Length: 146
Image (cartoon, rainbow, N blue to C red; front, top):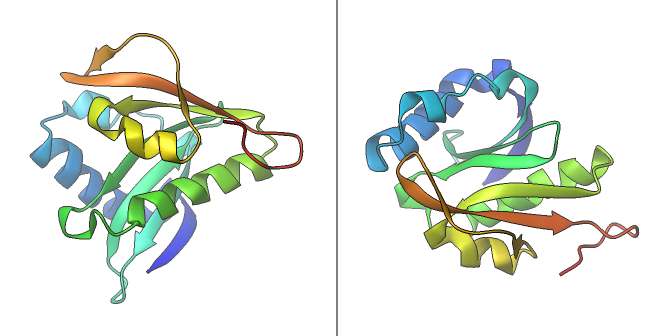
């Protein structure tokens, strides 16, 4: 498994395939939420399997929002999502961000807490799915608080 940073224009077809499968087919997230028009301004991370097929993706917005983290069903539970998230966190640090935030699906809160994210605020609905706002602040030495 290789984890790489890409611009949206470099891998749009592959990113769309993963997100349409996970968010569209599996979770019935409306297209206008999945495809919000912000991908061009975001940095994307891809996980490629042994044969080069993209099996997971995620993005980092300029304001520090991590989102659209999606792993194809056959690759879940194998640490791929954590590797994508860690690459996004590394990219945020390199960009000089002092913190990142995300909207975690309720069932994924524990996953993000393991990486140092903290809950902030009440549950809310996005695309018909309960989410929680979560934040992770970076320490000056490059480590994470938590």
